[in-house]
Image (tube, rainbow, N blue to C red):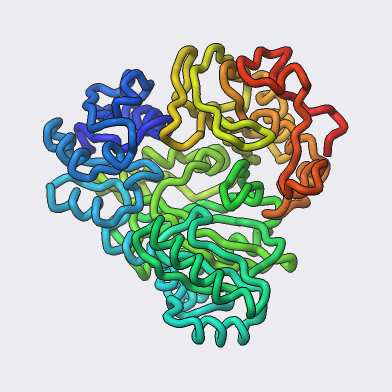
Amino acid sequence: MFRKILIANRGEIAVRVICACKDLGIKTVAVYSEADRHALHVRFADEAICIGPAKSARSYLDVAAVISAAEITNVEAVHPGYGFLSENADFAEVCEVSGVKFIGPKPDVIRRMGLKQHARTIMQDAGVPILPGSIGVLNTLEEAASIAAQIGYPIMLKAAAGGGGRGMRIVRSEKDLPAFLAQAQSEAAAAFSCGDVYMEKLLETPRHIEFQVLGDEHGNVEILGERECSIQRRHQKLLEESPSPSVSAELRTRISDRLRTAMKSIGYTNAGTVEFLMDEHENLYFIEVNARIQVEHPVTEFVTGIDLVKAQLRIAAGEHLEDVLTGPLTLSGHAIECRINAENPETFAPSPGRITGLNLPGGIGVRVDTAAYTDGIIPPYYDSLVAKLITHGKDRTEAVQRMKRALDMFVIEGIYTTIPLHEQILSNEDFVAGRFDTTFLSKLNFKNGESGEHQVDIKPEAAQGPPLSPPLRAVMSAGDD
């Protein structure tokens, strides 16, 4: 096992990795920007080193600064967390050249999976269903028009080198294709330094399902069930759960078997996620591979009893998967995760600032992953995630009830958060019944015909902004569906 590792990240995932390392007796090194000088991951790590100013491009995304910190502190490995450099094949390659173990897939695998059209081909060859679309990237407008005519409108244009909704356009008619193709290519080039896009048939009301993968460095791969990620806004996930209410045991087994074959064929190692869309007939279609740990990994940990971050560390240290998993895979109960973001729940405007009061919920079946603390600052430079609230129950009904209880007890003062939105989602009868898809949020309590977004019923006295003390914090009326 490693003696000391560096965590090339911040926030709750950095704290999460520190916890796993402490369990395994591994020393940790935190890196931080000037804006994070007083962050919890800096306090809890055994060592900490500043790698630059607040802007992530000059700190957390600065490969030279991170590698220098690793060399100065004499670590044996680097855990990239999620986001930032986690899927940067060049960074993983520099780690290898520098004699530092990258805790994740091999650089060539990250690179191949990052090219989504290449990943589609690999999955198709392994018998994994994919959406109709282009075989590779689109080279000309004429080629795009020809493929769109074959598969039929509407179609989706997607960036080949990235995700998160950037470089993505929905095209509903042939006349719109030229402009939207140019926009998608331009946005993809700006976001990912690669303007390549490809095409897929658009599913209008799909569910978003993903499967958790673990692979060791001896050729063994296991699939640890699926997660439902359909509650999202503009392709950004807000709430996840496992197992999915829409995936049968037969479908889970069939897709897992094919994924196991596909991931073995590419030599996949460490943690990863394979994402799918599901149509109204419960057919799954592959969309992409995320070659890293996911934000929503705790729901899988709850239902499998497997610490995925510890598994990452043990696999990177050379252990066999059978020793890491210690027995056959079984799924127990149901888990739900709500992402608590520092955003106005009505407008989704970011809400950075100082946390003036904090109460974290607890009780049986409740977990909170966070780096927040009273008087801590939520800086404006990074992702708005403040905490992940996860609940587990013997079934979905109990997990939902525990989440309602936990949300009610979760108090964050001084900033707006998405807690009120989650309270409304959890009280919605369609969500409780498992009847939803990726369009759920746009239909939730549709009060404003012009906005195209949900509207949250915030009490007038709370509408002026923080601090949001318990009696005044934004809440939903019980009848809002």
